[in-house]
Structures are given as C-alpha cells and as structure tokens.
Image (cartoon, rainbow, N blue to C red; front, side):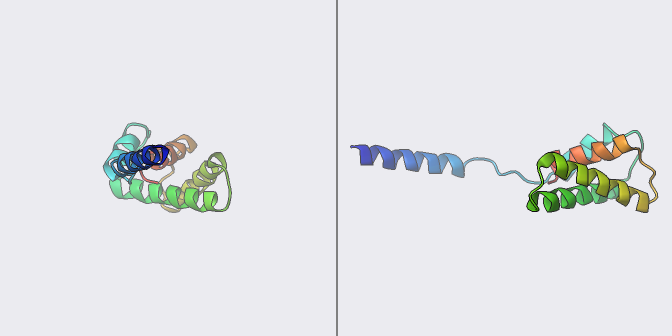
Amino acid sequence: MRTTAAAVFAVAVTFTLAGAPIACADESMYLNQVANTLSVYLTPSQALKLGNVACKAVHSATANGMTLGKARAAADDAVGWAQSDMGLGLSMADGMHLVDAAVDQLC
C-alpha cells in the first residue's frame, strides 16, 4: 500500500512540475521596465545591449561563487563601463535600474 501511494505521489509531482512555466528572457518586458525607470531616453538597441552586459556580468560572477548582491554590484560596474564606452552619460541610478530590469526580465 505504501509503495503504491509513493508511486502515485511521484507521478503527481512529475506531472505538476512538467506543467510548471519555464522562466525565459522577455525583451519587451525589459524594455517596458527600463522605459519607466530611466531619466534619459535609450534606443531599444542601446537598452538591450546594456541589459545583455548586465546579464553576462551577473552570470559570470555567480558562476565564480559570488552572492547575487555582489554579482549585481559587478553588473552595475560593467554597465557603467559599457554605457561610458557607448558615450551615453547615464547616471549611476540609471545604470542600477538597467541592472535591476535585466535581472528581473532578461537573465
């Protein structure tokens, strides 16, 4: 009886997990979040480039054992350098908003 109950439970868990939504990157949600938080206008291409820089930095930092907080700080730095190289002149707060949106929607 216990074996049957365990088997039924295992099948139920499998079907429940199989039906669970899979997280994926959503560029339009990212762009909407960025548009509502930045103090300057960025083209979608510029915003996505910076979002991808942020995600790459977060993934690299967490793969090297950093906490998410430290990984986000590394992403803030990476976005700061990238936006400077792009000649955008974003504020530190704008860069942090980009990282937040990237972690929420892209990474």
